[in-house]
Length: 322
Image 1 (cartoon, one colour):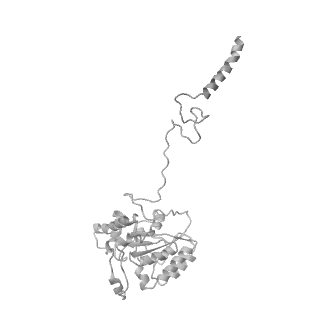
Image 2 (cartoon, rainbow, N blue to C red):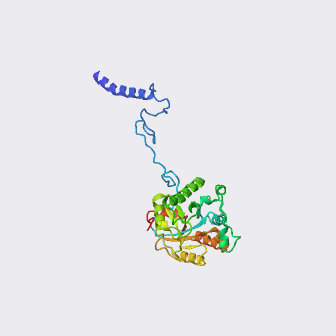
Image 3 (cartoon, helix red, strand yellow):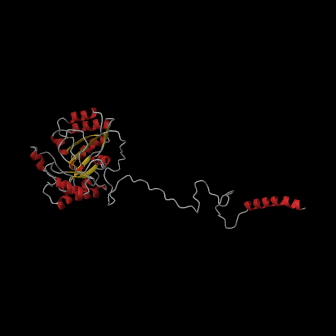
């Protein structure tokens, strides 16, 4: 009898366990699915007693300054892989009405350039430019704020040319700071993108090393284009005296462009052209500009960048002031 009881005991225990599994326990999760055991976790489900995991933040496409403003050129996605490259960039000064035709040429080739503007001179009509060049009919008319606010420069790199285009060499520290940073603030207000660069107004005789030091230490400007041509394809020696390769009016411009295209990049190279829109009218250079942009955009080994995009590629390797 004892032996029979011993044999029945395991059988009864098994039957009892099966009955428990088939029953719904009062207070259990009403949303539990059929066949799901108490305490079981579906694949991918976080256990209720497990620590909550915060997903990693998505990397922002823009760099921002201390005010949270998006910084021009920092969203390009361009990177360097350690091999020498050939870069091309171009800029035009003053924010004048010829810029619209320039942008039409750019758009034809899916190209983007840099435009340095003076927000303290909106709508200014500098008739003296044409008079100085001997052509009083030559237009040098700046866009108004309302006109620029319609999006004339959308997609382009808009940077500072100072507020009022003064000679800065005799300006006080406060005056220099105001001319640069107020212009940058105004451009941000209009475009929603904060410039990181500027162009010195009036040419290379109109600022000093002291001016550059003020800009470096007290303003938002990271680079400043100068005006003296190097006729070379070297990288800038310093950001606040960024010398271009040549001007848009250079009679050898297309030959220089051809030379650039023929060269092999044994080290990083930069072809930088600068100018003013009115010069395209006066010197009849519109076809030259078209040819130049076509040549650069169709070259397989040339990377076309705005001034600001180029800055971010080499920001840590070139000093602000040499």
